[in-house]
Length: 369
Image 1: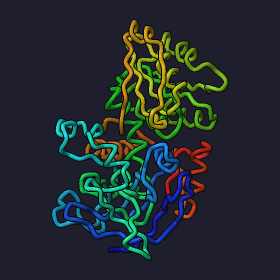
Image 2 (image 1 turned 90 degrees about the horizontal axis):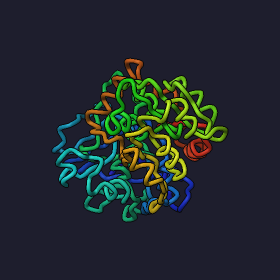
Image 3 (image 1 turned 120 degrees about the vertical axis):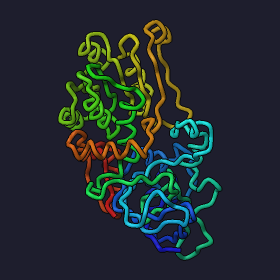
Image 4 (image 1 turned 45 degrees about the vertical axis):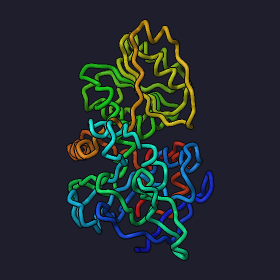
């Protein structure tokens, strides 16, 4: 076993507590990664607050980047010393996985939210009582700590000349927004796109829409600073939803409605706006994560007679082994400047990072280890 330091959630709502823990050595198909930095995502707060039933105590964190320190005997995908980004976990043997729909793995919830490996075991224990497990493997990684023990499957090798401390959010939030646009909605050149929500996911979608060739790109949010940043990242128009009816504004800007919309706030009322703002035959993607059981409504005839589509999207419908390196390359070419969203914190500032994220004063916190 190896001694590590990690942020632990022991009760609903937190706080994150920095603790010394013990971590198993890698199994034959596992990799130990020394975490360099880890993004903080809305889903971490969803789990902290028990909107999703994640067992406690638990180490969260699911946007890790780091350096491979140790590999199991059967690992061939990476080698010691490789720079890697950690992403979501999938089983690899169910029907969706076998046909390439990794983000719709039949065991996705269990593997990413049950706080354990697929066989139900954990690899992390309290330092003074190694018979007391601490739940881990959140999104297959639990990277709010100095080391993460992960499966070979969800480790993505990235170039050594890329800025490793920036890359962790590509594993979830940024992959979700960019992938929703490129992989799921398939936004095409000359089209119109509106992002409802200007957090890390929504702004990543704005950047991706620009890279995909959309010519009308709208960002709707209630935080003025986010709208200013959206213009820097590629938006052609912004809407402050506190001051203006966003549906009417999108229709006016686009001349009838957007070809594509994306809802990332997790608010049912905002989802309704994103659907209503669509053009004839338009498509709305849903990536916002509300509490389990949340319901929303829409005008059935308004959807049916206009041929609108509403689709759910997980992790940007991304194959991370292909999509994450592509995003790194776009960043290195100056075509995907996601670093403009980022503010860095130390591990002992993790509760401040969470607070700043929830207030909207920081778009994408990254915890440096």
